[in-house]
Length: 497
Image (tube, rainbow, N blue to C red; front, side, top):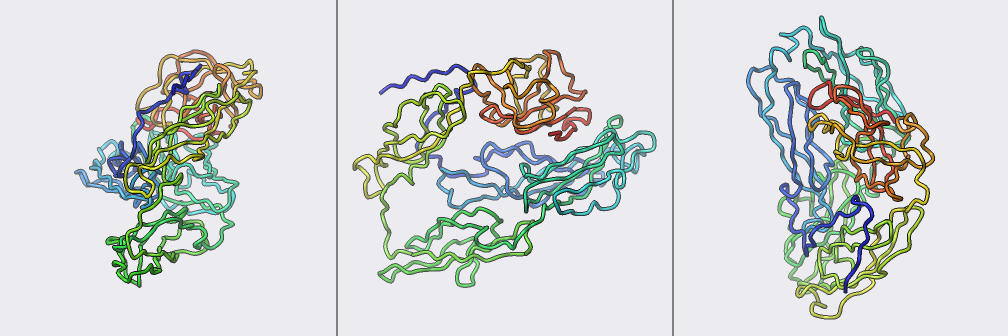
């Protein structure tokens, strides 16, 4: 069987070598990189190749004025993606260590009175919005004003937005969200661009309120099992950080074993998942959720089914051609249908896989193929009218706005994108999200990265303000950011829409 894939745009041809198993997910697999702690104590969280950071033990450290480096460590809790042999463990902890440099005389306010300083404590806040007058807490140096502020979010990706208004050093930070019961930790950093020194605030939180008590419905533990020899495989959960795994009032977090079942028949055993209650709930501390598992008396050989194939990846081009997923288990034989008609809106599509079971380990190993395993992919729209408003963008996109300051802004723009008819000017593009970009009659595959955009093909200096758009896989603008690199390698800026 052969398949012809017609690709009009290079942005949709992202193929990887198929693999039969993803193996064990480890800290090496996660691929943490670029972790650092600066002399003021500000943490730059690492980038990840795979998985997501869902918790960390520290959000900042004290400034280092000791005169020598100090070793600093942060433990990151990382979610394990689907398809790995330890997926049912849900998370792993990975430690990152960095030698925090001591402040140079130029960076130390005690030696350089041009450096900005921070005093007091920015309080935690709640509600749909809150404001912070930054000049209440930050003071410019003797002969150098604060040139800009940067707002850091932990974790990234919450619904809570931060916007700076006014002119530094007398800017106001506005925190807002329309989503109930969301929480973010924030740190403000003040820059003195002329002396390259900074001051950072305390870590403070904002919760949107309207919260209820955390319970087992929020934790939503699913899956997991106990083997005949007593080995416990943890389930997965939706919300909360696991504090301990308990059986018969004994902590088995490390051993994950409840003893073998040699009774001759299955027995029920209760595993208690103890969670740290997340911020944003009316209760605090820990909460216990009991899950009853049936422990078999003998090793049970499972039957291979669609729930075991662990599909991932694949795509449907805008013309309707299908690149099938990679399987974590089993061998892909075929799929139906072979092609879809073009669509005018992004459309979820079901494809049905035929899979050969693994050669061993299942009751149906060596038997007939299993069929009709549904897998859903989204087919991007084909736009008959891409609009008449064109903008220029740099070919290279980055995961974070500050990466443009570390890697440099390209001096030329690689492609011209057309915005759909709802965008008539560059001002529209700078102030709204939800706009869609078209490239050769289909949505531009932005891969959820940030891109520099311009109204004209002119060079943009990274020492001046420039606009970044975060664009998803279907050409839709998710975020508008105004940025510059005057603050150094991390740059400075903030969300504007």
